[in-house]
Length: 205
Ligand SMILES: [Fe+2]
Image (tube, rainbow, N blue to C red; front, side, top):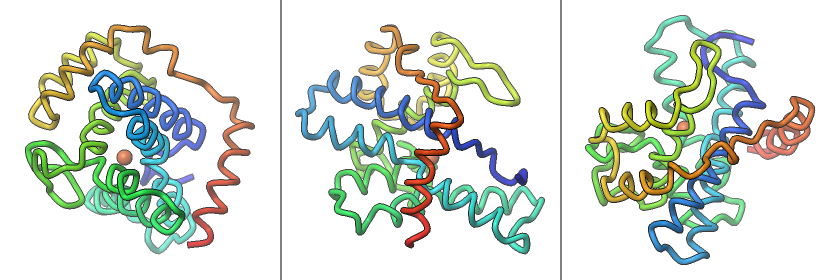
């Protein structure tokens, strides 16, 4: 596999499950009704699906692959929109679709793809943003060990302008519960099975 996207299928699926569990807890802490909790959790599970298609796209066509960092940024930044496009005609609600599409928007307007600001970012996307960053920081990466909960929270406070403060404060209240129970690890063989289903979805588009 190439080096353009740091992509590992098993890790991606585990990340989706981890984020989804955190989104569920956080949405409940925010007092949201259960049908919304369900829809946001579903969006948390599927938010990075576009990375699967992006990996096919990059690795399937050598002419697209470029070592330039700017290219890397350009293609990686496509993934929320790719996730949205994969899901949009498959019966998901606008609540799920909006949360997926805008999950990399930052509260201060510096995110992507649309530079939405503050309350203009759909609520589900603001919730996923907090959970997604936390999940990434508290997971081992090939180039670094995971941060513990306190270190991760302190790194996020340094970037607090990216987050909805009300949501971040609610997240602080739940995060000291045992988040490790959400860090499910699949055998690679199971990840392959799940990916077959996801691949079929992306191949039809
Ligand atoms: Fe993402």
